[in-house]
Length: 176
Image 1 (cartoon, one colour):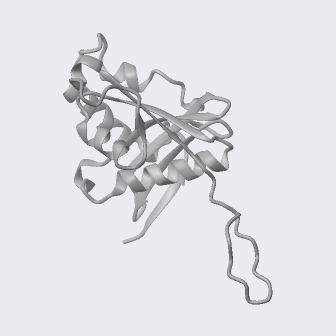
Image 2 (cartoon, rainbow, N blue to C red):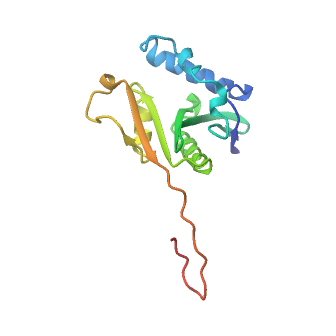
Image 3 (cartoon, one colour):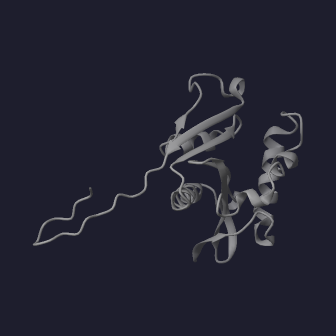
């Protein structure tokens, strides 16, 4: 079993099964709750918004098959907006969404972002749990009924890994 990340676009044929499954999941959870079908939300942004240098679309492949993915696009000069972090139904509860999230954060830092903004829906408690447990700050009242808020916003500061200065004469390595 080999896992690898592939950066591509949501229109790449290899992404189709995962994107279709996510669209079905949105439709099942929300229907037309927001006044439009899930496919409208999935097509809200042109695929190019998720391309470098401003964005990214990543798939986590296992033996060449997509099992999880996610994307980001430019929100502002220092902020990446994460979208569509998703795990294939058959591969849940393996920490894959967290791996995708970690990969997206690292990529965002490499592309010059220092902050992440994201939203998730009130009928996605596993996403809310993931973000709260990976250092994201809720931009809403955590004690309120999520349905009364509907769109749950989060943010996180991204700090590049500190540079390590070289040791001399047997001194320990230190981070500045």
